[in-house]
Image 1 (tube, rainbow, N blue to C red):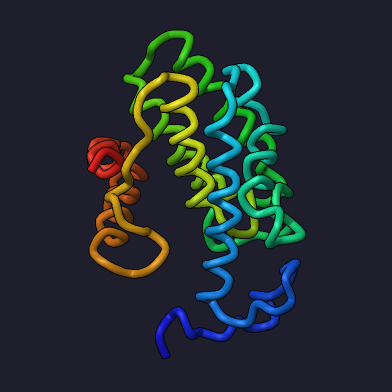
Image 2 (image 1 turned 135 degrees about the vertical axis):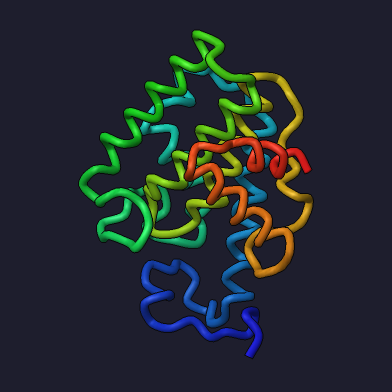
Length: 192
């Protein structure tokens, strides 16, 4: 059975706002529509650095991306996963990341691309939400690079990263390198 026809189990359906969704492909479609709404919301606004780098804004962006699909959109996860920090450490880890990023911006610690990519990498590693963390962190990096630094958004390999394939495997390899402190492959991937 292909990934798209995969029926969602009860755990995967928990928190869904649209009861008619039964397969992974239907879920992907509804999520993508909601994400496109969030992208339109971003496109029509300007953002202040001091507003963007807050816990409130991190949650707000996630809710904009998934609020029409999931009840828990914009709310930190309440259970531990096999990735991410302990659920109780999410606010502290996020505050550290937000403060670090403001410092990087104020002190030009890294290039604009590297600030956005380092932010994205650490945000997804914290894994604030039950689901959608990868897409949330990529859209957040795009928001940073476009709205804070006035540069073109990242291309992220130009293909979708949700489903298995060469682009996704290159992305995972780049993430694993960033986990070791080598951000160059992820920087290159983001602009590929």
